[in-house]
Length: 403
Image (cartoon, rainbow, N blue to C red; front, side):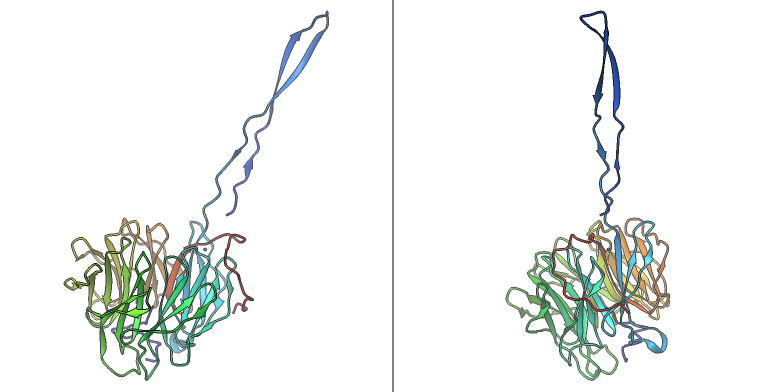
C-alpha cells in the first residue's frame, strides 16, 4: 500500500543456486619397495584417494521488487516493477517489468516464486513469476475497484487485495484471489476506503485499515477503524476504533499484536488481538504511512513517517512494543512511502519517493546504508530470496513482454 503523501495526501492520486565449484584433490601415489622370493625386487604402486570436498552452495540472491508510479507531471501514470539485486555486491536495478497503471502495492508468496502487484488505476492485480521475471496475465477486479493494499496468506494459497475506491467513489471491500488459478472470488465487505491489510501468522484472520476518503476526489470523512475478517468464513467482524486515517498495518510474528499507522493523527495504535483492546496512541514525528516488524526484533515496529509539518524530509521511527514508546527517528531521505524487511529481519528497506531511492536500515544498529537509486517514482516494495530457475513449483502461463 502506498499513497504518496506530502502533508496529508500523496501527490499523484488525482488527488530474488549456483553450486560452488568442486575442488578436486590430487591422488597421492606411494611407492613401497617389497622384498621378493627371488633375487629380484618387485616394486608396487599403491594409490590412496583422499576424500573429495564440495563447498556448500551459495545462498540465493536477495532481490527487492519496487513499483514505480511516475514522477512530476507523470505521477500516477507509472506502470512498472523494478527488480533490484540487493545482495552484497549485487548488480542493483534490473530491466523494469511492465504491469498495470499506478502499481500501488506489492506482496510476494512465502516460497518466493510469485509477486502480486495491485494496480490502482488499472483496477487489476498483476502476477509476476519471480524465478524467471516473467509478467503473467493481469487479474481484472472490475471497473469500480481501486486496489490499494495487498497481502498473501502464510500458506501461500490466497492473496487478498483491498479496494480503496476511485475518484468519486469509496471502496468497502477486499477481494480474495486463489493463487493456484489466479482467480478472484467474491468480495468481502469491510470499512470505508480500505488501504493496508495484514494477515495473522496462523492465517485465520486478516486485519484491514479503513482509511476512509483519503484519495483526492473522494467525498466523505476520513476513516478511523480496523476491520477484522474471519478468513475461514469470509465474514467481517465488528470494527476496532483506532486513530484518524489508518493506512498501514503489521502484525507481530507471534500474532499477538497489530500495529496501525494513523496518517492524519500523527500516531501509531496497537491492538491486542486476543481481546481487541487498543492501547494509548503513540505519537510519532511525521505522517505515519507504513509499518513493518522485523523477525530479528519482534518487539520493535519500524514506522515510516512521510512528509508532514513536523518532518519535512521524513524518517523511520522505531516503536518499542514492550513499552509502547517511540525511539529516536532515523533519517532516510525525502518523503519515504513504504518499508519491507529482508528475510532474516536484519535490514529494513525503505522507499524514498522524492529521492527516487531505496534505503537500507540495519534494524539492530539503526544505521542507514548506501541508498540505491530506482528512478520513475518508486512507491511500494517487497523483498525476497530469489529462487533459482528450475526450482519453482507453480505453473507459468505465457508471459507478457517487458517494457
